[in-house]
Structure formats: structure tokens, C-alpha cells
Image (cartoon, rainbow, N blue to C red):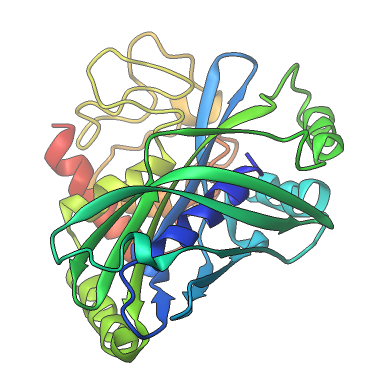
Length: 311
């Protein structure tokens, strides 16, 4: 999962092509760096890095910084273990690359191209050289999208973090964690002259997303490792089909904790919102490991999504 950093930084390299005679700045809110992890040969998860920054200069030099402390695995203790044992409190991983901008300097608005890129990732004291195939699309005169062209698989051994993965297995009593991980990246770049206005627009959009079903679908990604929406589809957690208005701990075929089964809760808007914010406070003794959503807007949006999709 760590190697995803390498591949993602590569994406940055490609992002600069559309630059004409100015530098480009990464839009963190519109960008994504994600990797997959499989545990016990059966449990799949998608984790992300929430804080990225980067630039591409007018002469084709790209640099992306990945805040390793922003890793989000949806479990607080696991985030802490990743930072301490895998990333060894390194703080930041950096990717630097140079590319030939002439490959796509003539890319028109609405046009796209697939290009090969090469980069060097600096991660926890190691430098990893790699290449990747990237998809580049010019969305406007001032905005460029760069993403991985398909899924990229990376080896944690090459990154020198096998010992950290071993430690995670030990701490979580897991029989196995995959050492080759799939990585996907989406990077959005704005010409630096437009970055301020783009940031302001993103802030306005965030406010507008309150109670938005589409935004709630994105928040639900934090829940998908355990919960499904289809009727009768229980996983590590019970199905959420028709959850609103239903009594807690009553889905057929799921083995609930005593705390949940005997809670007496009915999942109204109010009780569900409270539970999503602080599960262990609302149902002391619940075995659900999710710590809760930190942002009020995420709770509101997820509620809207559940109301629209699960009833």
C-alpha cells in the first residue's frame, strides 16, 4: 500500500504537459491518491492519503509532496500504526520528475493523451525509480487532469517497508497482508494564476454539498469494507438495506454484539447521526471498530445517501 506513493507521484509528472509558459499547482481537494490492501486473503480495503501538494514548473520539472501523516485507513489506531511502523514518522514522501513537455504541449482543450513518465520517489530514506503510463486530459486553458491509465501494482519490498508490514500483522494478529498492492491516482492541476479562485470555488462547493447524496456516496466509501446496501447482503457488518426507521441489532443472519442487540435504539435521523459521529458513545460495548466521522458535513451527506439508497 505504501508503494502507491511511488506510482502516484508519477502521475504528477504527467500533469504538467498542458502547461504553456507557466507553472501548475496541485488542487488537493480535487485530487486523490488511493491504494488497496487485502488482509487474511479475503478482506479488501481502500485507503487514501488526504493531503497532497505539488507543482509542475514551466520547464517540465514536477514535484509532489505526500503527507504521510494524512493516511486514512478509517481506523484511528491503524492510522497511527501506519505512521509509526510503516512510514517510521517520516512526515513526507516526495516525488520528483522531469519530462518532455513537447509531447503534449499542443493538447487542445477537451483533448487527451496517454504518455509514459519516469520519476523518483523518496520514501523513508529510500529512493525508488519507476515508470508508469498516465492519462492526461486538458479540461480548460487553466485546468489539467492527470490519472493512472488503469491499475498499477507495486511491491512493498522494493520500498523497504516489509518490516513495517510484519509489525502491522503482529499488532493486529493477522495471518497475512498483501505485499503487492494496487494503486490509483487522480491529480488535478491549475495554472498558478488561477489557484486562488479555484480554492475559493472549492470552499463554496463544500458548503453546497451539505445533505448532498452524491457527496454522501463518497463518504460511504469509509463504510464499504464492512457494509453493503443490498437486502440480505451481510458482511463484516450487517446490510444497511432499509436501515432508517428499523430497530438496531435486528438484521436477520447477522451476529450482533450484546450491546447492539440490546440497545433498544431505533435508527431515526437523530440516532443514526449521533451513532455515525461517535459509535462507542452511543452504544457502549459495540464491537464496530469505526471511530466515527469527524466532519459534520460528512454525517449530513452520508445520511442523505443512506436515505436515498437504502430504503
